Length: 93
Image (cartoon, rainbow, N blue to C red; front, side, top):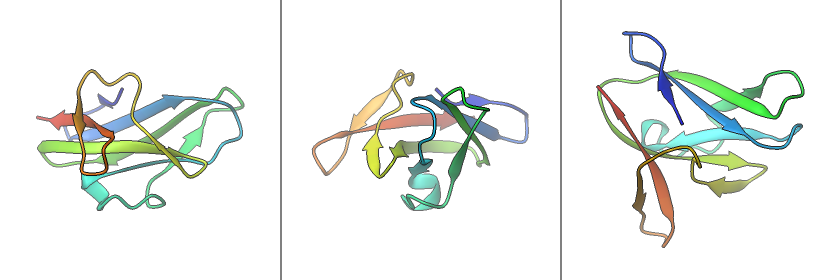
């Protein structure tokens, strides 16, 4: 689940998965570019994060883990997309 870290609208996305993966976050904020925002692993913990500055608005996003798209399992809001799956939703205020 992403959390706001400062009043400058920086948002930190976090995902817990297996260590040693290639993990990215993609969404409406980066035109769904699956390689633009890599997430870095903290040590060998399997905890990945990326911080992105975003203006106010509503965003849809997914994580990309080793090329596989997935919703944020910690996000409380998901919406259907045109591919027949779900996107996670983030509201930045």
